[in-house]
Image (cartoon, rainbow, N blue to C red):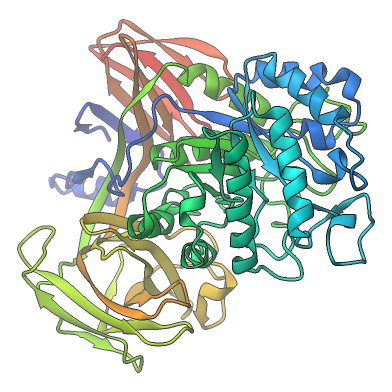
Length: 606
């Protein structure tokens, strides 16, 4: 079946459409309904940075074993087309003993990288064994216990003094909100004291330096809020996030929502740029996915799709983790091979990053277009049928104060009075059936600047009650938040029943929930909800860019589809995920492309 939609003619591989129903309608003489296109399922809340910047965690100074041959991996970084790398200036390497300085590895890495016109984001930390009050670590090796403040400050001043003419961006520690990297457990007050003192020392040496916090989990903003509450918001310039969602795909893991809570806090405390200083997928068994559900081809697909998704969400700079595999941690672009000096075996992700940087060089963002159909489940013209559960934390009522579509919306007044997990849920007396082909669900929300989460409870054919986080309420102003319904939910979102933790149709919407997400939050507020909808249709993604006189469409479809795009070119250039180029002839002003989970780049004149 073919249909024309805003420059598209599309025939989907039978995954999202019920072909049998369409055929029966045609035989009966009826015309199949043409779905309404939603060009942007999630309303943009930030403008993508132009030009895009896709970097790499290179780890030359901290992991490459031979300072005399640093040019070998550095030449590969240059081949990848990255303009930024994230490098660790490990304390144990530069000061293995008090006042015994060794710059061998950091000097070699800086010479190799900087000579290729690649900029460096320097990471300061972690501790060295001799520099902490904890006595159980090896004195001249890495320690993740908080350091002696004076000793750490001496180390920071020495590193920044040596490299400040070349390195102007410094990230303070790595993942201080994670117990593995701040032991025995995260301590936001202690980290904030370190951040304030370190930033002061850096700026005393280089007043133009930019300071980043140490790469926090953006899906839980508790630690970020704690930095603000402890007086640290003015001590850094850029918010660094590590939005890991593996092994879920970028779409199924709702990666585009990674910045929502962070931006909501920044609206309250002061806006700052956001950098993703780590994001990645392992291509085999790893700590995050012992079963190894992501193979090398999927890793390469996810790399391209994740980088583009975060860029579209307004993340200013994105660094892939990592350059080379470590044992038990195959996140790299290069296989482990014969050891840390062996860079001879590239994975598909290597070619994917190189192709991404080459194809998007000099391009600017135009729009994101998705062939999605929204079907309204509830417009909140009335709140009859929505009953509050035993949580006495809010009231739902209709309102004309704000509305997204028809003058009426649901107003939710809430009050969270404890520093524990506060939420309020409104359950449907008669659950609302979902369309069987639904692959996402969303709602328009007018926020109040708090990072609370809007969730839904869905009941499936197996009797399981599953919870999905649609997104963060965010700042005042209407925006659409949504969550994919495919894949397995995390254990904490499996609320009732026994089954596969996957939504099996037929399914129903049972409740909508507002959760404080940041448990320490205490206070009240008001948000508005409107036009709760499911998303069906053709799962085709199209990021449209412009480079000079050429239009550049970056296209992919996880289930597979064939799409025709309008063009003024007699021939279009189609570049694969890995950089292989072919020519596609146009017919009658249309160019036809087969899409799959691997993104492709279509260059033509529109």
